[in-house]
Image (cartoon, rainbow, N blue to C red; front, side, top):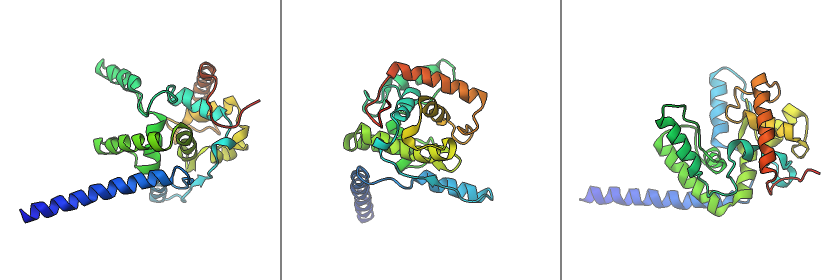
Length: 233
């Protein structure tokens, strides 16, 4: 019984420590820039293992210095109901599951909020444990950060190329522009790479990537506007 009580105390302590530290981290990052993420360090390890020089191109930029075309493009391509859901798009989850049950290819139904939670606090993977943590952090950032901050962190932390993270770095390296100068077609091209940023290059786009960009530009016309970013006159 003593051993059981001791294990119970340690487990209780670990749970309390995790809850307090995770909530504290989310609160702090509501205000502070996110300069590094777990994925950046994972990619550095992979680069070194492949015999390559470590590369992290990343510069934080506030949402009011990012062209509104960029959040519009990622909402159009990644999460059309971003402004309406509370972190989970159950309609897309249902569609994806139904497609899989019918024998078709199951597509991802991860929202921008879920992707942000994963990018900032977790590691890549598909295990149920990681998905459970992802759901937990998604609820936290939806409640504590709100949509504008989630979008700001997402656009600054998402992988956008080999060693390239965030909209400022990709705008500078691949478009020779500041992030507030990105046009609709620029933003759509960047968004088109996001499902596979290591194989889709916005600097040297393939024909298929350009076709995907054009589809996103058309989809942007239906959403028309998101309340974040530098307005385009």
